[in-house]
Amino acid sequence: MEAVARTFRQLWRSTTGFKIRNLDDHIVLFVFKNQGDIDQILRSEPWCFVKHLMVFQKYDNDIPISELKFQWVSFWVQVHDISIRFMTREVAENICDIVGTVCRSIGGVDKDGGSFMRVKVNLDISLPLCRGRLVSLKNGEKIWLSFKYERLPNLCYWCGRLNHSDKDCPLWIQSKGSVIACLEV
Figure 1: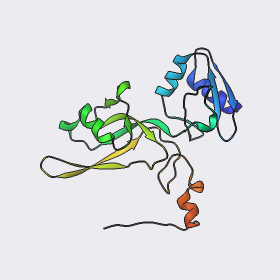
Figure 2: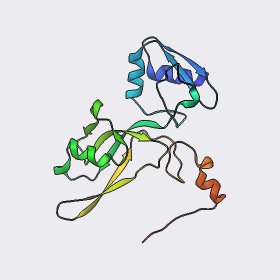
Figure 3: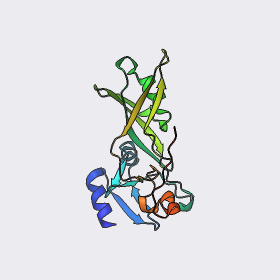
């Protein structure tokens, strides 16, 4: 717990500091005096500790910890291979709707000047990451747009989820260590 507190104290530099409590089962409670610090931390997601994703949720003292669902984290998603004429906020947000919930309220799209756009998306980490999307153009042509996730922590390479490691993956356990794959033509 001391290492977690020391690491995040340096990263967050909160105005009034915070206290930290271990609530067991990999749940940690950070207690702040300043709501602005909490809002800034949540806007700056994702956060990791030793390359493992930290999933944050605001906590109300009236709710039992066991009822909290730690499954949503915001990531910047880069949408690659968009043609220049389609590099608009509306197009980028529509493309990223398949990934998760677009964070429109916090200026959720950023045009980086290159061949991609950035969209802030709230992801359900219990689902596999989406690697891209096939888009149909007006002329009937189909193009593949690939997604890259910024500040991506460790993930399960068996199923593409962020909420467990390779060794804890249900697919790995089910296959008893053998490689399983599905191919479709």
